[in-house]
Length: 144
Length: 421
Image (cartoon, rainbow over all chains, first blue to last red; front, side, top):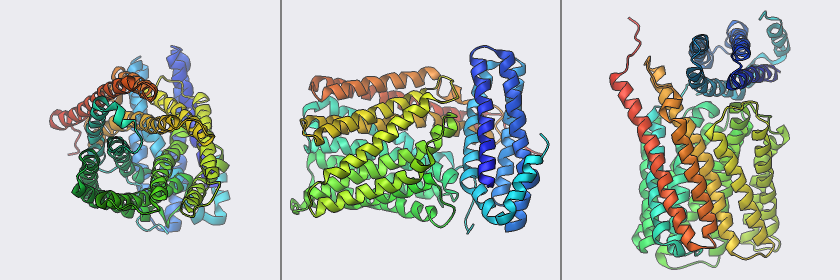
């Protein structure tokens, strides 16, 4: 339940990033910047859903406070910093830097997503049991 | 249920790089063998041919795959390999020296070296499997994890059968089952270890890193069960021996062809259209896999045995292609990642660690190597030329890896580090 919802959200973010890359490759800077803005917004919203709701619920149910969720929060911070560097590169028209940082960001983001999809979300689904549906509803209603 | 679970990021960079850095040295040794003795390398079961095959599967493929496993385990397995630095040192040293001993045993026909190789390679591989396999059971399970389990189990059996064969070579006494043991050894090694691990990685990497359409959930769920079942039945048939054993070869060929075709489709349908050499390596690799399957199927149907050499070379090139593509991503990422995680503000970006130009040169040399080696099955002079291209390719690989390490060390020594007062 949570796995499917969050995995689909990961994929939706990835598609926005691919759109930004495609537009920037075609030298459509304005369109690329807009797609990147959407990607960044969607990714940050995804992090918020996790940090403000999902991880708290997981920690409460399992009692695991400083474990995997803490590492995921740390990675969110690293990714936020990379997104900011990419935004600056785009703003200053340093397109090569944007792609250079983007390559690292994408690998890091996907490794992060793999950990969540393969381990953390299935564990959260198990931990929340019948309440998983309610959690998805809460996440869906969170303001972007 | 969650005992030992850690989503920690990565083992120290030396853990992975020690494996990767030895790959070009084995590659150059293999190239030399192909340049100096092309005709002998092409004769199946000739000692020089066996030396070449083992330099490739152990020194190049298994060494890089075990190195990558140390990295993958912390991302996909949920529980990182304990004491990664010490265990990597033990596994890598035993594997490297064991591979040299085995190649030396075949090349110089020194009986004692078979014993040395058996002990070192057996210890290395079984220790690696014993270390990683328990981490893959007992927690949350997923398709890639199932593939990793199959790969490591197959690798363990490959090693055990290899030891049995090495004792036969050492003593000169071959059991009546030698043929069945040999066929089981290479089937488990090529399909169970190399094939299954690459498929397991592809299931994750293709969809997520290239934003490609997902593989069918049914295929992901059942691929490793089917491969395991077909391999097990093939081995039972080999030892029985029963008729129609080729049916299982046909099933494995169909499964691998399905994988090659669906992977190519996914790569073509990917959303990320950025020019990326790793995609070229994946595409070339899957095309080589299709050639290997076609050649192997033709021999099942009664075509000339020479096609079996084409099948083997194409299959090994398929694995090498995927590995070179992945290495070109993993190494710059790890250099950047470890430096920036340690707070170095001037950590080089990935495209400055292995520039696109050198990545493309590596790919061009790979294509030349593949074309010359495959054509060389029919014209031995071309096979030797393939050895020259391979030597150049491994030279570029060594330069890429050494340059990445140099940049890493330079930044560690001279970089500006962010520190909190």
